[in-house]
Length: 126
Image (cartoon, rainbow, N blue to C red; front, side, top):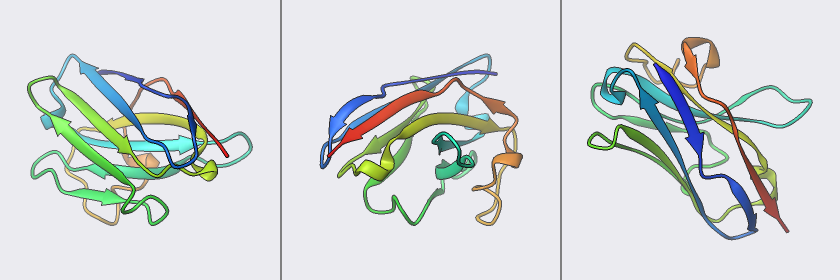
């Protein structure tokens, strides 16, 4: 499966952005999908995930209550709605897919994901 993430940009603190991740080759309902982010010099960080079978969602503590991951089966797209953005949300955001159902303890592990899209830059100005 090939993934493409887009929707990043420059936004002021407190603003919102919606990232999209589209898939070609397979449908997202066959995959657990996650969003990760990375800043230079730091490890890739889990942001949010949505499980393939039951669409259970999981969030990093730092974004819980501000970000929402969702899936549109008809458009074969996974979204990350980001509200109340902060400077520390600045990063390159990547979407990833795993051809398996991940439990809560593993959905946040980058090693569980087999497919990765190119990143999209999100910059939050204060």
